[in-house]
Length: 183
Image (cartoon, rainbow, N blue to C red; front, side, top):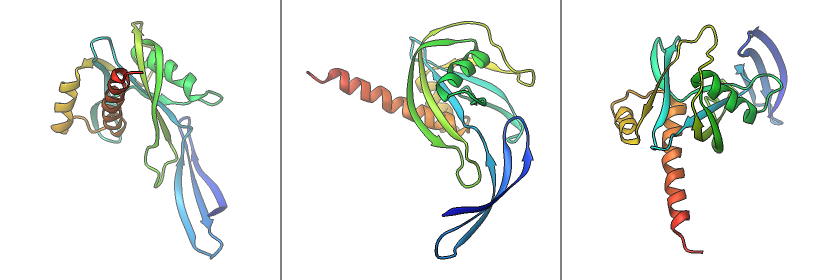
C-alpha cells in the first residue's frame, strides 16, 4: 500500500487528524480519517511490596473516572525513554531508578497511529506530583490480587492497564523461572 493523498483536517496540542487515501499496485483503495499521535509512555510503577500504583482521573470520552496506569504523550523532540520518567514524575511525583520496557503496542490501529510503550518502573522514590492544569489525579497503590479482582469485576476498563497487568505477571513469572535456573 502507498499513501497517495493526505490532508490535515484538524490539529491541536495533543494530536492531528488527517484524511488519507492509499492504494496498492492492483488498484485497491483505502480511504480513512486517521488520528496522528506522537506516541505515549505508560508506566507500571511497582513498589517493594509488589504493589502497583494506579491513578484515577475523569476521562471525558468515557464520561467517568477510571483507575489506570499513569501515561502520557511523547512531546515533540523527546524520546519515549525521556517521556516515561517525566510523565511518571508529573502524574505521581515518583521517580524510578530501574526501567524495563515490557512492550510496545498500537492503541487502536484502525484509526489511531498512537504507539504505546509500556515500562515497568521500579526502585521508586516519592516526590511531589506536578499535574497539568487540566488534570486532577488521585493515586493509590493496589496489590496484585486486588487488581485481579477489579479486572474480573469490570472495574478496570482501560486497555493499557489491562495489557500492563498481564504483561507484568508474565514478566514476574519469567524472572522467577530465570532466577531459579541453575547456571
